[in-house]
Image 1 (cartoon, rainbow, N blue to C red):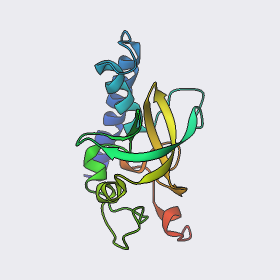
Image 2: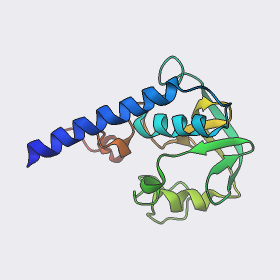
Image 3: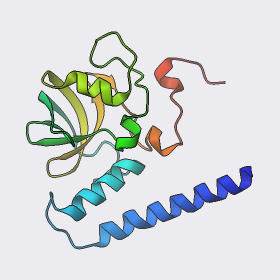
Image 4: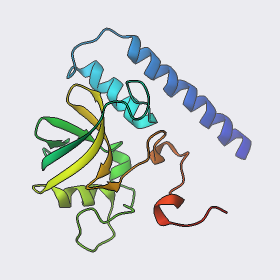
Length: 162
């Protein structure tokens, strides 16, 4: 059974890799077109960043944090924190909104709406960013994200490797 799960996981990675490569070969439709958004979501989901490495195009963005019911923004910068299923089901390792409660990532983000924050983010394309830090606190490490199922969060909880 365990072997079957591993094989299915490997096949899934190949399929996702093929989808991202295929999407990158499609004609561009501008930085905010549907194909660019699909490509950006795939890159964000599996931890691939456009540019010359994981630190390419990293910027700090400061401003009023807003949410339109679908996406988070600071000004015209569209900010992404991973797949919706992840941010709505994963417990946050940091109390970003400072309310003293242990909440899901999504609830922590909602607690920051209409406040001034600074995020460290990678620019996937014009105006579209994958977030790595929130107010100086690490949200995710560069590279393969925790929602891809490969990371451990041991470093976030200051527990020694075993």
